Image (cartoon, rainbow, N blue to C red):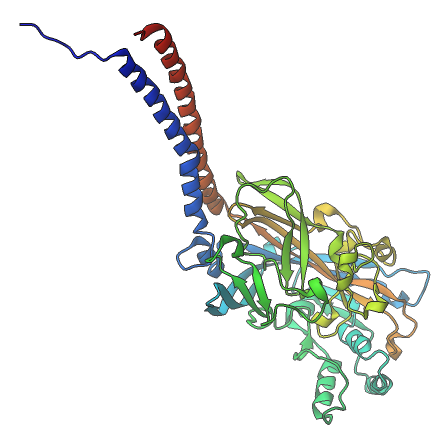
Length: 494
């Protein structure tokens, strides 16, 4: 009995060989392009504010710890303020470090794929991270309530009358002298002028009261009645990203308006992000990476951060943006920033570059914002006082993001608050120089946890695992292609 084995023709062998090679290259393309695209598409569904998504959970119950550092300036020689040969000297105290947690309230999801909410910021003192004694340290600084009255009523016919009442009844002093840090920040210092003015304004007939806005507090502190307040930061409306990922976290309105009244034109527009949620930017940012726009309710304004360099944390690659001089230029050197000036257009710019007038955002107080220690500001600000030592490593505003997800990797949000000292027409201010003096500066610190970093790395590891597999398959396919060509030419001859 004869047994026969099936024999393939050379043509069939060639078809099978080249067909296998094509199949390998198709598989390589799937692993190199298809699966990474699927992973990205699935991951991007997590980066929007929708119930069940990761960003939604973080937005309402943040996993990343936030710290709030406050540095105060102690005025050590105020008795020499009218001496033109002596510069005011300031000694930095702190940081007084607080943990910060955010809670959302009055939340509503809107039909236009936006979310409206209020924000409660909750601070707790962290003594082990602080430098100094929050409960026992004391400072001396300019009386901010008296300065506010002077600035608000400067040139008003009622100012001399009010000045006489202040002096006759000893309602105020030029300084807040030797005030406990605890009072100057959150607890509030009792202020007789503040309470007396509020009582006086309440009994004046309508239309006769001066145009002055007083805070509804019994005492003054830079952060009094802000801790756990659901009203202070205002009402935000921002995109959820459900309609399009690039709308995730993008602000549409603040306090029910798309524009603040404090600044003209684009300087008053509500835009950018509030800081915690950013739109996923994708993977191909290109060589000209666009700036970030960050809305700060404490400034009633947006600051622009320019891209600086690549950044890495816990093995996660990102990009770093920093604040530059344009944020506080006032139109001195950059024409587009002229709308930062709060004076009439014909009087602008009022201040040299380096400070931003936020008085209308802070009850009319003569407050000017800068970077800490007048970093990047005109040299005249530093030369007018002693104790300023700007250092980009300590005072630069920095924001690092993981662009694909829009998740912040590291934040050092640094801003300084200064008071404009001048002769406003009050007796207590007679003969003082026209200078800007530092009051305090803050740094909000955020650092991505390793747990969240591991989740981001898992996405990257899966993508790169498939991409490496694609390269391996391409190598195998290339080798088999070479062998197939050799066999087709020299072995499988017809």
